Amino acid sequence: MIPKIIKVGGGDVAEVQIGGTLPLAFLGGPCAIETRAHALEMAERIGEVCVGLDIPWGYKSCYDKDCRSSENSFHGIGMDAGLDILAEVRSAYKIPVVSDFSDAAWAARTAETVDLLQIPAYLCRQTHVLKAAGETGKPLHVKKGQFMSPWNMKNSVRKIEATGNEQILLTDRGTFFGYNMLINDYRNFPIMLETGYPVCFDATHSVQMPTSMGNVSGGQREFIPHLVRAAAGAGINALFMEVHDNPNEALSDPNTQLDIRYLKNILAQAKAMHAARQELLEEWGEDRVHLDD
Image (cartoon, rainbow, N blue to C red; front, top):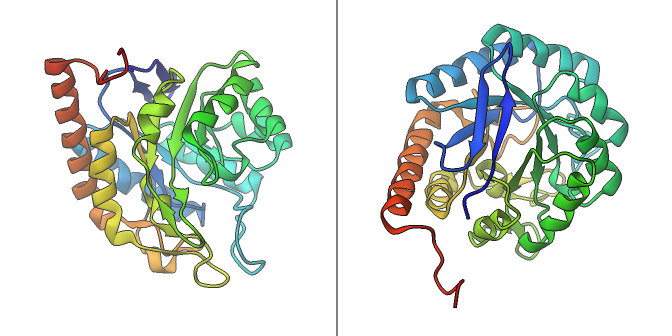
């Protein structure tokens, strides 16, 4: 199925369109906002890569990390400080910005700054969170919970649509495979596309090994390029990756964030794979194997 197109940003920043048969879009940045200087530096460096590859993109980073395993983990710099930094990134580089929120009461305030409002995977079923997000009128980025089947994401979509909001991007970030392990089922993309909305692959969280190190999550970053190529071939409309200049010293998710020195390599391959799939669809038509029997 060819999904509808959602529009992120526009006006005083670049407009990023995601969906339809459009080129692959990218959403990325550090997991957490660490400092103003770091956010601005990362936005500039990621932007240089995306502009060089002609990939439309938005900058993602979060002000609050509510789902940390440990009480001692970094929980974020706070909403006011974080949104001020995102607003500066947005103004300085004329790019749309993305952040999530973990309390329904924060939705409206967050939406005043961001262009794409993200709903964390662990909250993707929470009615009050989904409705609060939908009522902002902003495009929404909804991550499929690791505990959710892809076909049940239609229920989350319907809750948002009930608010009148039909600007939705659905993302797969892996599915629980026993304890402390995630696995990717690439059937998730065509299944979630049946909602009519574009789909995205979260590559860096997909290599996470949740709380496998006792009080923090481990990860297998070496598999990121393999998973990205497969997802691009499976029909995604956007790619999401958390990117850092020194992942091992990152304040959040140090074991899963992609080192920025690998970003150009992976994005170039993702773009090429996505374009190859589009060419195949133009030649052979949509994948309707046994769907019309």
